[in-house]
Image (cartoon, rainbow, N blue to C red; front, top):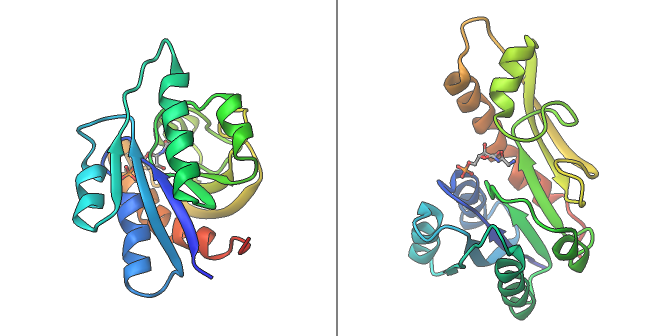
Length: 188
Ligand code: GAR
């Protein structure tokens, strides 16, 4: 049975696109039913619409995150999606939202968690002088960038790297890893 996915994305959407490509190439038995964004100008929205996916920008109010989260939770429940996939979703979800979908929310983070949580993890890796970094797909729990690790990929860090070059090397692995993690999820 196909896995049903609701994707949350804030921006560029290259991870969303990579998952979509795998599905359309017949390499991932899944269906993206919904794309939600906190930013009306997110390129991911347009990309989703071009592929016939129900794509919605929901207003986000920093002072009252429950407005976005109520609308998102309702849309997800109505869509009947099994899994919620955070793909470059740059907002912190409240424990109330996370506990409404226990063990069903996935995130990808561009570091080898538990190292370099939070913002600018690629720059954090460079600042720390590590020789390897990478990316992690994990289940989301109320603690930031924590939760059971599903998949990781390692990439080398070179002396000549800057944030841009390291981010690009990690992103290439993210695109492969996210589809792999979804493929390996249990069916129910
Ligand atoms: C990706 O590198 C993703 O791992 C990161 O944002 C980028 C989104 O790119 N996510 C986080 O840092 C979440 N804490 P995309 O919009 O092209 O998928």
